[in-house]
Amino acid sequence: MLLFLNLIIYNLIFFLEYNTYMSILIAIKNNFLRFQLLFALCSMTYSTGLFAQDPIFTQFYSNPVYLNPAFAGSNKCPRIVSNFRNQWPGFSGDFITTSLTYDQYVDKIKGGLGIILMSDQIAKTLKSNEASFVYSYHQHLSRKFTLNFGIQGTYISKSVDRSNLTFGDMIHPRRGFVLSTQDVINYAPVDIFDFSAGILGYTDKFYVGFATHHLTEPSFSYISTNNTSFLNRRYTAHAGTEISLNSKSLFSEEEKSLSPSVLFIKQGDFQQLNFGLYYRKGNYVVGAWYREGDSFIVTLGMNTKLLRIGYSYDLTTSQIGVYSGGSHEISIALKLYCAPKKKSLRAMSCPSF
Image 1: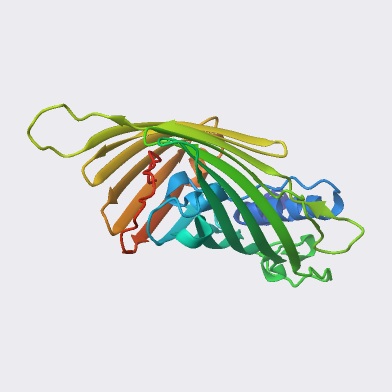
Image 2: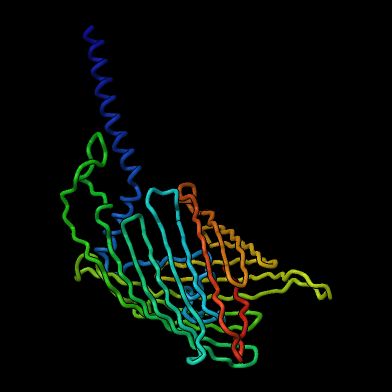
């Protein structure tokens, strides 16, 4: 009898310890993203060389002014572009990037003007808002070749939402993250002024460009001025061409073309090579891209004289692919009407997505 009671007590203790252990594991699993974020935040706070990576859109050319300021005014008429990106929806935190861009060509200044508004949110905790003003000078070097020089000034506001952070003293042994933290850390919003520049050369058959963002590598700190971080310069190189697939038949047919292109981005230790192509038939576009070591990308779009709509999906191939749920991106562009100019701007072979 005594042995039987001992056995019951032993199993009861084991059951309680096991459930306590499992509850902690479940709590850690459910808040794993927050642990990662906290670790990253600590790294940002106590390191002097911050590895900072800007948000990058998959539909690179749907928002060309964000890619390279030299693109401002490359469309003949005023253009309004909106982008929405939901990255890794499989994780509990939100990785959401949105942008709104306006640009147009102005005859009197022989170039383009643009405004970029962008908001980036990481796991509902790290938030960044940007407002940029862009100017691009257009120079026709020959009847076929045009060279654009773009400059960009940006105001950046970064902040940390402390209410979404998780600390060690918030863990209850049996119920997980239910306690209030006693840690008191004040994360002050950060305001940054930044500058970028780019160059773009193109004909009606090909284009090539290069841009550098964060020219001054501005420094900032979330907690104190003694532990500053900085935004690494972001270098972007891109090139492509358009190949017509239409026959020389006398009968009219829908315009068809193939547009291969390549894009390389480097920021600090981070670098990314993207290459792919778009197939266009009439108003419809389908594209396939590969982002080296990260994902395969499929893009579908419709492009008319007044409206452009695109959707893309990133199939993540890296180690987080099983859990990330890929990435979704939507772009919408309105191409406003403008009166014909005496000297029409040279058409570009740059893709629309």
